[in-house]
Each structure stands twice: as C-alpha cells, then as structure tokens.
Image 1 (cartoon, one colour):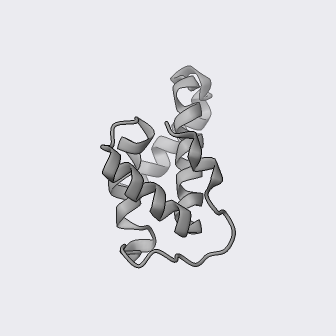
Image 2 (spheres, rainbow, N blue to C red; image 1 turned 30 degrees about the horizontal axis):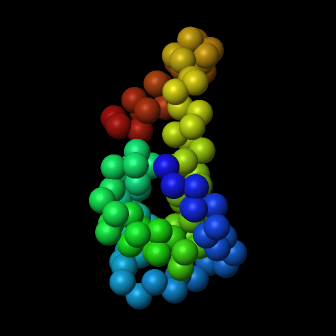
Length: 99
C-alpha cells in the first residue's frame, strides 16, 4: 500500500474532483478501485488517478480510512470472539429483517 495516502486532505465535505460520480453517497471511482488499491494491485495509471481523486475528495478519504481500518483489524477477529448470546441476537435480527 502506498503511504502517500497519509498526505491527502481530510477536512471539509466538498469534493473538488470534476471527473467522478458521487451518486449513492460514494464516489464510483473509489468504490471500484479501493480493494485493488489496498492490495497494491492497481496499475500505475489507475493508482495515480485514484490518489488524485482522494487528494480532492475529503468524503472519499474518510471512506478510505474507515475501510482501511476495518481491513487491518478484520484478520484479527475470530468467530469465537463473539459471545454466543450476541451471535444469536444478530442472527435473529438478520432473519427478522429478511423475512
């Protein structure tokens, strides 16, 4: 992963990148490329475009930071870490929502 991401602007809620779509609350560019970026799998031209976008879009930086944080801790979690009562409540909730 590229450490230059730390230099991206994090203030404000306005995106200054004219070449993207913020429909659905997230930039389609970031949603399409974020996994490959985090895995270091983007070709140079796409990686540079992704980084340019983040430099101009504080909402996407916040989304990126959240996903990066989850990606960092997810491998540390185990099913055994969830108490059985909590697991049962979550499953019941999900079943109720899909019924």
